[in-house]
Structures are given as structure tokens and as C-alpha cells.
Length: 102
Image (cartoon, rainbow, N blue to C red; front, side, top):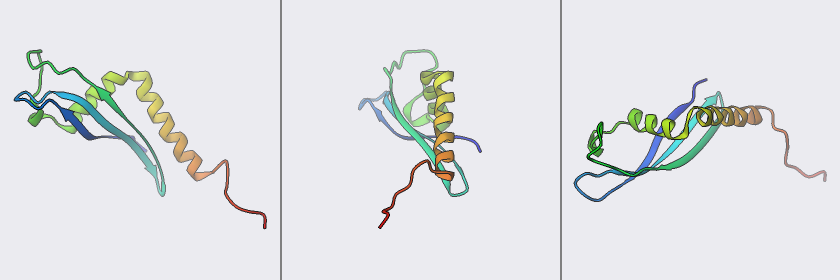
């Protein structure tokens, strides 16, 4: 199993620089019919004069995911993976059930 990170949407400035203001993301993994997903949104302050600035149209999922992971930090990236694994484990062996005794 390996967590897959995906950028689901981005908000950007409506000017020629199109700097990213918000990046929405989803991280997921599955084991057969059992899936876990965590999602979030990170905020950024675009600066087109900064070294390494990438034009909006040249961004890739991999690049923006690297921003997300950097913003979250290694500990939180690990926690995201742990939350997904816990969801999959709970799906395989639920700790609760629904039903009526009558």
C-alpha cells in the first residue's frame, strides 16, 4: 500500500502571474475494497519575483504536492498516512455495527 497524493483544485490570483493562493489536496490509499482518504487545503502567498517561482500553467501535480508536504511538515505527512491506514483497518474490522435486535 502506498499513499497517493492528488491536488484536487487550486485558487489563483486573477492576474498575469496567476499565483497560487490555495491548494486543495487529497491523500488516499486502498487495500482491496477498503479505502482511506484524508483531504485538506493549504494557503500560500504568491510572489512572482521569488527565486524558483513557477508559472501557474507550468505547475504539475508532483510540484504542488511537494509544496503541500513541505507546508505540512514530515510529522504531519506521517500522521496523514497513519490516519489513512487506520481508516482502512477500521473498514476491514469495524469497531461498531448498525442494526436492531427486533
